[in-house]
Image (tube, rainbow, N blue to C red; front, side, top):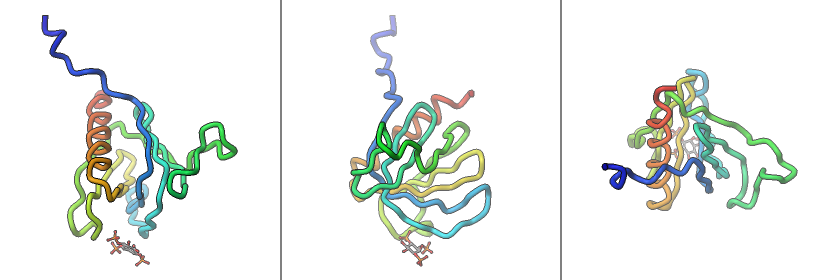
Length: 128
Ligand code: I3S
């Protein structure tokens, strides 16, 4: 009966260009290094490939591997506090492995969509 009211299934893939920096790696603080990155959400993984303005694609291109991948399972997302970055629209992503990333876009709607997609992914895979 309630089938009609179920939300549509979440898209498992999303991609776009975001500004990204690691701030912690395996629990250790690292120096910020903001870079524009082609970002792909695929299942419970978030993949990054360095690129300029989204022109680089590693799909079927010569760059066949993403630069780095994070496992979202068991992770968390929140809006970064002011002391984490002076930029606006910054998401703080923490993984279970102890990596923390800041993810940013100048475009409100873009970063809001990513925030939603990442939180949805984390809750979808919460029991894995
Ligand atoms: O958290 P911080 O140290 O203020 O981060 C800034 C620095 O990483 C800076 O580079 P240097 O390491 O060369 O100082 C970056 O250019 C800034 O973008 C960083 O701050 P924001 O507030 O943009 O995240």
